[in-house]
Length: 155
Image 1: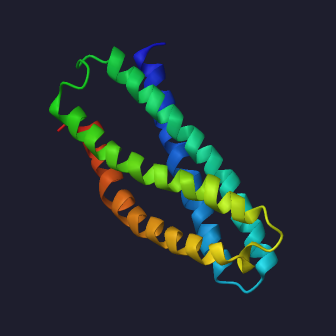
Image 2: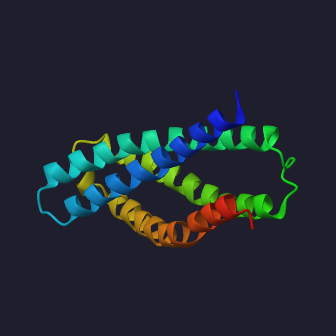
């Protein structure tokens, strides 16, 4: 595969990694402001499905990123801008691991029950989600823009 095609795949995967999650969490935020528990449960389940797309796209980002480093003209992780980008991405991966656990393990298990909001574990899961949202401010506000900066300006 040529470098240019691989770069397009990488960039499209980045869009699919970030975009659907932002939309899903926006709808989730709106649903939590309403009193209708049936709608809220539906949005929770839909969000979990959308996050599957996000996390598959993350795998494509990682695989295509490694391939770009392998065939790129700068050598394997030897340039300072690439090393900085990879350090920022390591922070993002920690966040994503927590996100994957919450979305695909904890919330999926809770949402499989008939009345998920009545389960005692729901409140603990909601507290963990609040920590995820706080971490998202750091990841989305600092680490992801830093990765874009290092990738575009090669500084």
